[in-house]
Image (tube, rainbow, N blue to C red):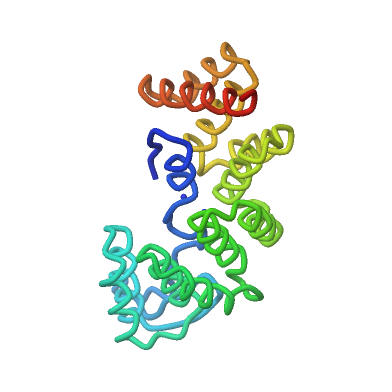
Length: 235
């Protein structure tokens, strides 16, 4: 549901890694090309079929969300009256991005038993993080992983939450899985570097950072965060 850039400070870092990233749903695919390569219809991530015109409109709304225009996207979703699982998830994401988290959760809950359950749980987990309820976020992200275990973004988000809870062994497993699955490479690598630095494995952490081309500025931030976290643990 929990992926954009890392900033200084643990609370800010948490929201950066579990922030308003687009959901893990796959984009719709065009099918039924005619003799002139004209798109006849579209299939959504849950097998919904709709016209090319509807597909183009959904793409336009998605682009608005990617551009950070969540309120505009909401207005267009309301105007369209679309009732597809894909657009319902978009509404939940847009409400979350607009800070309307209770409304967002209510929308996500309608998807929690369908084909986009993983995205819905991830979205609710990210809302829980924003409220400061990391325990609830962890439970919800575990539900997301159970619904779609091959989603690298979800495994990364879960790994980071486990890291925050001090569960390093479990966090490492989730982050390594995210790296192997692909799609969350730099973020998962950043989290794994942070974990290694917290454990004092600085040489290994720096080696991993070079492998994934993490820039020096990010490495300095991660090193500072690791130092601050160790100080809190021993303070």
